Amino acid sequence: MLSGVVLEFASIQASIPSPPAEWSKFHIGPLTIHVYALCLLTGGLLGGWLGYRRWKKKGGPEDPFFSIIMWAVIFGIIGARLYHVVSSPDAYFGPNYDGTGDLTKIWQIWNGGLGIWGAVALGAVGAWIGCRRAGVRLSAFADAVAPGVLLAQAIGRWGNYFNQELFGGPTTLPWGLQIDATNPSFPAELPAGTLFHPTFLYECLWNLAGVALILLLDRKFKFQRGSMFWLYVAVYTAGRTWIEMLRIDDAQMITILGVTQRLNVWTSLLMFLLAVVMFALMATRPRRTGLDIVYLPGKTPEETAEETDALTEGTEAEAGTAAASSSSTEKSTDTSLKPSDQA
Image (cartoon, rainbow, N blue to C red):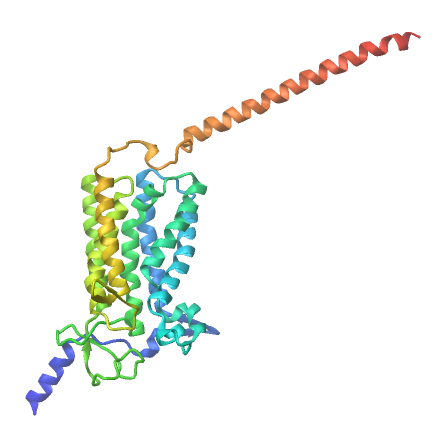
């Protein structure tokens, strides 16, 4: 009897409990606060703090940093949601697009569902717009914020834990994740009490290790020209590929050369290969020194000041010429009036 209790207690201890479903959100007056959103917000703030420190150290102007971030975040959220809808369409359009899905769920972002590659793609577009407006190089900005993006992803993944979603297949490992049998994501064919791979934790730990790795490498090699960004993509996708293959949630399946895998797996593999090639190209180019690493041509503070001075001098010269011309005209008018005055 006692041994049975001990074994049962040991089995409970050798797993990761999920938080109660009611912990996924709470209410403050009429407002509903979703913990998923708080995880994303916390990750974004810490990632932004790291990126801001690196940007200042790189010599970037402080004022436009947060405006560039806002451009990137707004575009990134839209892209992340669109990618998720495309890669996991059943909930929105129904299986095989049979129209049985719920289109209103597309904008219910608080229920989870963001695709990192959509965030990277459209987020980069937003950052490019912000950088062009600020007169700084997108490559320099991307190098500065890359570790912060990976840090934000590590923390944001805990939102999946509170939502009890996006977990992996069944496992008997001591760190298996408990999922409520009543959770809509729980596979109907499996018995209650089945443990699952905690893919949120795998990705969190992988990303944190990646942040440490690329920061150490950057301290030694001082990456430039966007190479730091491509290193981040390579590190992230190397982990995302195998973690994605563990997941059992519904996803768009793609067959290439007879191999059927989730869309995110193929995307991660493609991005990993692209990142390795781009990193090699960027890292082997001649190094640059000075503020031209950060600023676009003609946009350094000195050049901007010279343009302003030249414009001011030109305006003053034009004003002086106009004044002289006006004075000459007045004198001519006075002379022409003298004969009539004498008369």
